[in-house]
Image 1 (cartoon, rainbow, N blue to C red):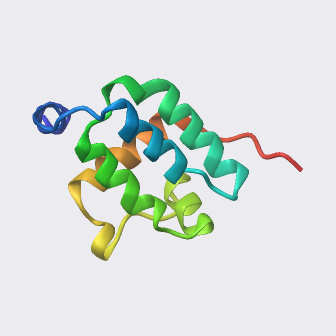
Image 2: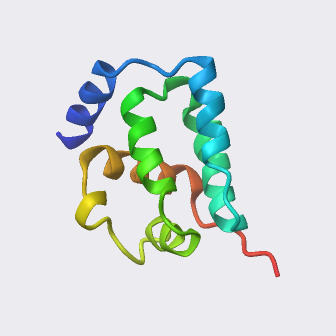
Length: 106
């Protein structure tokens, strides 16, 4: 049921334009390789269907420090306080789904 509601909500939000996608790519550049791997796979899987709602959720996640973001991606933590919003949970689920477990490079 939650997946259908999420799909319906995302469908109500307009798709991102090419320029908005470009800005979002730039905004998502990270300093930690592990985060970049998740984000790269996220865009590879979901870029054609990203909406304004997704961009809002992703922007909220990109405001985090690299290690805090990685903790969320690896399910060490769940979103709290201001991050505990439906669009953040939706995008976080998409990131987790597309990223899998990153390969750690030493």
